[in-house]
Every structure is written in structure tokens, then in C-alpha cells.
Image (cartoon, rainbow, N blue to C red; front, side, top):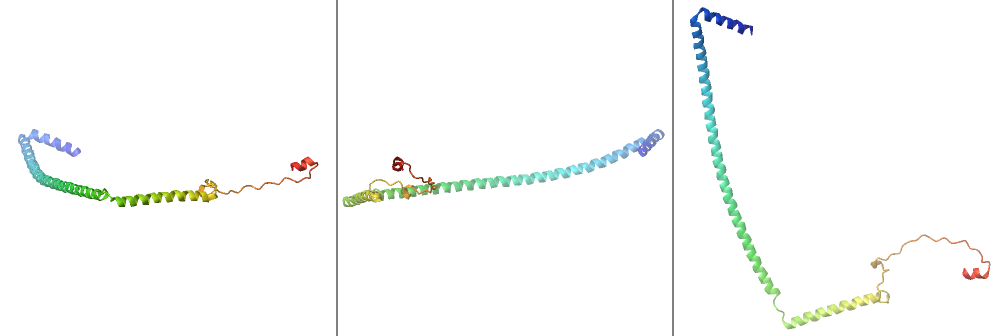
Length: 179
């Protein structure tokens, strides 16, 4: 800071002593400012050029993204249409198979076959009823369900041993009878 003060004092003294000194300093300052202005102008032009290149690259990428988006949308639409068409075809095939199955299932049976099936079913039902009653009766010959069976949930459980009371001889005939 002392050097700056000394330079400032020197400059003031020079301006007083030499009127052309001020003009020389101004010319020198203008020359330095012009050079700095030119450097800054060139830097600004470089930055503007880089900005223009970046914008151009961004626009190329944007165009590429828009193109890719359109391709994806078209591909998605094609896939959706293909899936829808396939679903409709599967639906028609299933409907046709269901109709064919109904024709086979709902085909009326001949009377003789129907009679045989009914007789067989009745015979099976009668056999089942008879077997049920035979098993019930054979369980304990009473015809009632035996709930004490293990299969019915019955079980044998241990119990504590009973204590015997001390024996004493009866004193009279009544105690002997009551014993």
C-alpha cells in the first residue's frame, strides 16, 4: 500500500509538472482497455460458438429422441394390435371348443344306455345304504353308535389309585350288614 501511495503521489506531481503526462497516461490506459476489450470480445465469440455447437448437438439429440419415441409408439401400437388379434383368435378358438364340447356332453343318451346307468346308480345307492346299516349293527349289535370307540374320540385314561380304608371288625350285626 505504501508503493501505491508513492506511485499516486508521483503521478499527481507529474501531472502538475507536465501537462502532456496526463494525456500519455490516458492513451496508455485506453490502449490497455482496448486490448482487454479485444480479448474479452474474442472470448465471448468463442463462448457463443461453443453455445451454438451445444445447441446444435442438443437439437440433434432432441430430433433423435423424437424419432426414437415415434418408433417406440409405432412398435407399441403394432404389438398391441398383434396381442389384441391373438386374444381375439384364442377367444374364438375357445368358443368353438366349448361349442364342440357341449355337443358331445349334451348329446342325448340312447334310452337303453340311460336305463343301464340309472339301474347301476340305484344299485350303488342301495348297496351303500345296506353297508352303512350292517356296519352300524355290527359295531356292538345294538344298532346304536358306540361313542366310546377310539375312532369316535373315546379313550382310556389313567386315574389315581384309591386308598383303602383301614379295616376294623364290625361291632354289631348292623355294621356287619352295612359293610
